[in-house]
Structures are given as C-alpha cells and as structure tokens.
Length: 254
Ligand code: BT5
Image (cartoon, rainbow, N blue to C red; front, side):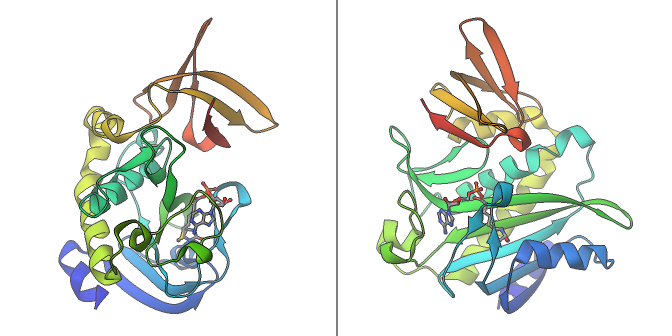
C-alpha cells in the first residue's frame, strides 16, 4: 500500500489505474485548489510527456510512473534546481541496486555512462504552474522498472530489472524515491551543498559536449562546472558560456 509507506513523510498518495499523463492530472488538481504533498501514481500512462513535446513511452504495469505536487518555499533563483535535485533523489534511491548509476546534466538518470553514452533508466519532467495561490511545481518521474528489451522505445534505454536481473517491488521503490526527495528538498536552501552533491554524480562534467539550443543552434565546449542556479558552465577557446537547464534541447558528447 503506497499510501501507508508515504504517510509518515506527509505525502498523500493516490493510485490511478490509467491516465494520459500524471503530470497533466496533477497540474489540473493543483489548478482546482489541491495542496502540495499530493503524489499520483499510475499503472498505465497512455500519453506520457517528455521535455519539449517529446513523448515518454511505457507499457502498462512495467514502470514506476508518478507526479508530485510541490510548493517550494525558496527564492525563485532556487527553482531551476528542482529537476536536478529530483534526478539526484532518484539516483540516490537506485544506487544500491545499480552501483554505476549516474546523472547526465540536467536530469537524465543513466547507467553505464562512465565512458559511453549510457542507457536511460528514468526520465524527469518538472513543470511550473500558476495555481490560484501562487506558483507550484509538478515533479514527474518515470522509472523503467520491469521492461524487457523489446518493451523499451529507444535503443539507449534500460530498466532496473534488465540491469539487475531481478524483479523489483515498485511500492518499495516509490517509498525510497519519495523518502529521498523529502530528505533532499531542504537542500534547496543550500545550493552550494546541492551543487557539490550533484557534481559528484554528474558524468557530464569534464567532457567535451555539444550543447543543442532551440533554433538548431549547437555550441561546443568543455563542461566545466555547475553554477549556483544549476546552469552548466561550458568553456570554449574564447571563454565560457552558461546554459540553463530549461533552455537546452540536448547535451551530447562531442
Ligand atoms: C524526459 O524527457 O526524459 C522526461 C520524461 C518524464 C516522464 C514522467 S512519467 C510521469 C510524468 N508524467 C508525464 O507525462 N511525464 C512525467 P526528455 O528528456 O525529453 O526525453 C524524452 C526522450 O526519451 C524521448 O524522445 C525518447 O527518445 C526517450 N524515451 C521515451 N520513453 C522512454 C523510456 N521509457 N525510457 C527511456 N527513454 C525513453
């Protein structure tokens, strides 16, 4: 029972058999006056969304698909950290099972990414919405849990079960991710601590990358650092430039 697991942390968990998108559903509830702390999980997401109108595809009952409603009590400059912090929370919750789990900036959760492109095990979509009583964040998480190779929509993807060879109990994993997220949200007040924790598990730093920006603009450089707002600092022959997570289409190894 996911509701019992999460209750001590103050989350209110609801389970839907099917819904087009848990992010869309939670956003609608927020606009209708829902308070922060709502967590909606679904067995079957039929029109999952990625960033920039991309699709997130998962067959029924094979993944852990949920969205969390938050109203972070921090200055607007800390909001861009939310997707990064969520990736960090998922990575921490899965690290026991997947020792080589890592983050690609801004929020791809990958395995086997130390020297190659890695395989994506989780997607995260954070959307800011204007509710009646101010801005709120819908934090959407999709973890590939039980998919077989045939059930994954793209080549560079994997599931927890494929990596470990063992079945995964989704309710327990949900409890771990929610616990991890709950414990880390306080770090939004201490972006230096967050920055250093995140940088430790981010495989992007130190690599030469192509930063794809809207309008087919590509800028190449070396990923040097993450700044206080969570943006990526990229060095070029002539100096540095900074990209915010919300502005980037892709970051790819050059
Ligand atoms: C993401 O977008 O990775 C964010 C996905 C967020 C999904 C969650 S599930 C709960 C909540 N409700 C929603 O509607 N969404 C959130 P992006 O970085 O744009 O990556 C999307 C790309 O990942 C696609 O274009 C595919 O290439 C690839 N992809 C799609 N489904 C995948 C899967 N199951 N596993 C791995 N890669 C996938």
